[in-house]
Length: 237
Image (cartoon, rainbow, N blue to C red; front, side):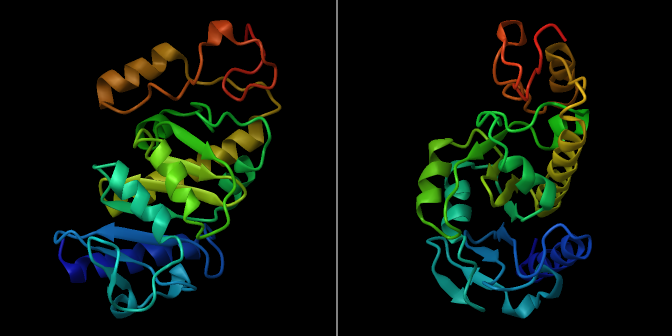
């Protein structure tokens, strides 16, 4: 994808996310890796609904600004994901309502923030980690991301929002949307004893679609006695 095409894609997807209420005001940011080793990223204080392709921030491989407006304050976050996940070609960070709400709940397992509710969550998102709260733009979040060692393409930042990497911008956007819908389903059903996908069903998805499901269930259901567990709920379900 050329520089011009990448700029147009960022603006097109950003506007779509904004118009559907997935990130309000000037919140959220998007980045894409370029073929020359640098990357494009949305500017600081820019609304994803009103991006100008010519004003997107262009950075070199070391993260230095080459052209465009000043970049988002979340550069350390994006940089850490690119450094630790070689398949990441694009990153979407939103402040989407239901994902933020889930990140605020005290019982969430940091190794598997959401349970395997649907096959498309397993196929498009995979395991999602939960990180502690960091001030927006805090360089310390980069260390926390690096501590995950590239195992996760999706992360919830506590009291802040989701960050999702993909092998393309389209894939990252679709996975972010799937994560938000799963968070909404989780909140709607969390007190209703919902059925989650079983280990066997997840293994079947892995076999057929080559998706990452190994960490979607963070611990063995047979050993779970925690009534507040977001993965299994009451033992013997």
